[in-house]
Length: 323
Image (tube, rainbow, N blue to C red):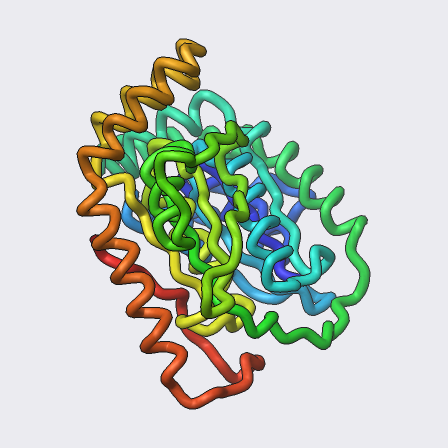
């Protein structure tokens, strides 16, 4: 099993919990500051590292432990990874996401922000360390609960489904991404059916002429984070680059489409939001079509390659399309 401890920044509560799990610190005794500072990845991640899965080690039962910073995207991340696992046939029992954020105290928030976001480690690190020591007993209990539900790690005979998946992303998943999905499948973009689903939910649109499955995904304002976590997760399961194309269309109109999302999601003016979104998409149809053509070319180039098994020997991150 792959166990992913995840928190806002991936530097403190998740690292400490993973360290307790691995026996790097004594779970029965609160460690001193120097012990915490020696832990791998403690107070080390910065914003560009968020979304990366950092390997911490393998526990005594053979389970692989990772830590990740996912900011405030806990629920979207859970939905997105569960969706990708279902699409590629990854066994749900082979991974577990553990959230230590309920045990994060104010000192950890202030100290972590000062150290990692503001870059003032000499000021913030002692504060967040003090907070971590205060939270240590609760983190130890959390880890105990996780470990109590684990058996010995077993080898799961698994190969990801040999399919090609295209995911168009934007703020809500039903804006420029929806128009791109319609264009990709040759549907009339004027008849796009908007469907309000929670952020992080993969919405299936259909299969194209080559058999590739087309989805849309809402990633909210952290538009680079969820796709990055998905790519990291895909890498853990050796899903080939060509089999997962994640395309973020948010940059095509972050402000204008953001107004549509604001009207629909926050002000509940759904009809007005849809009108505004349709108008904004129409102004950018040329750009959306260009992105779709790039994706189709990438799929065509991939299809020309020599067929190869999508087994454990295939490694690499999923493809990133620049727009």
